[in-house]
Length: 241
Image (cartoon, rainbow, N blue to C red; front, side):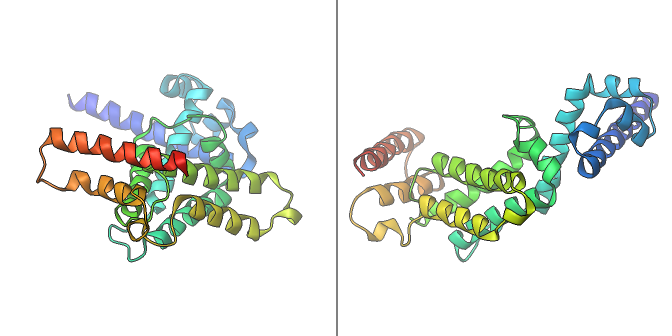
C-alpha cells in the first residue's frame, strides 16, 4: 500500500511540474510554443510521460486551463458583508479584468474557447463567489435583472473587455474603454436606489425571492410555490418594461 501511495504522489508531482512548465511556456512564448516536446524538455520528463498523464496535447491544455482558474481563485477576495454591494461588484469586475491583462495568454486559453476548463472545481468555486455578490445585490433590492442574467452580463462584459483590449494595438489601448464597459455593466445590472422604494412589484419580488431560502416560517412546499409566484411577478414586470 505504501508503494502505491508513493507512486500516486510521484505521479501528482510530475503532473504538477508539467502543468507549471506548460503555463510558463504559454506566458513567455505564447500558445504555439506549448508543444509536447517543448513542455517535456522544460519539465525534465520524456514526451511519453505527457501522453500518459494527459492523454494528448488537448488534455494538457485543459489541465493548464484548470490551473489558470485555480490561480485566479487564489487572488479573489470574497467579502461576506460588504458595506456597499455595488462597490463590491465593481471591485470584483476590476479584479477579473486585471487578471486577464496581467496573464493575457493564459486568459485567452481560459476564455477564448467555449466551455474549456468549466468543469474544474476552481471554476465553480469562482462562480459561487460571483453568485454570492449578485445575491447580496438582490437581497438589498438593488438588482435590476434576475440573478442568472446578471451573472451572464457580468461575465460577458469582463471577458469582452479583456479580449477586446488584448486584440488592440498598444497605441489604441485606452483605459477609458475598461471603465466605460464596467459602468455599462453596473447600469445594466443594478439600480441607483433599492427597488423596494419604487412603485411596482418587481424589485420587491426580487428582494423577497433572494431572502426566501433564509427564512424558516414556510414549509418547503410553500417556499417553492411562493418562489414561483415571485419569479412570475418579476418576469411579467420585466416583459412590460
